[in-house]
Image (cartoon, rainbow, N blue to C red):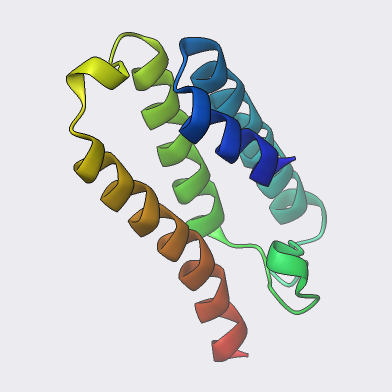
Length: 109
């Protein structure tokens, strides 16, 4: 679902797609918080299919940040006001952060 919504946002660049992305990441915030509260920091988030990727505060922070950016885009920052090269670079950086941050927790264990 995350991949499909991400592709939809990149391809269509519409406000509804941005809202959908924001809502998806708010759901991830709730899921991460639930895991932290119910199971503790040793719980697996399952990021990228890894069983040993534990949930942590960085999950909540990254998911909140993505949701805020997506809501900001839905509120009026449209494709006409964004430099496409900068948008592609920012998207690539976000994917790297989403991949690296959970992996750091795995490496520490």
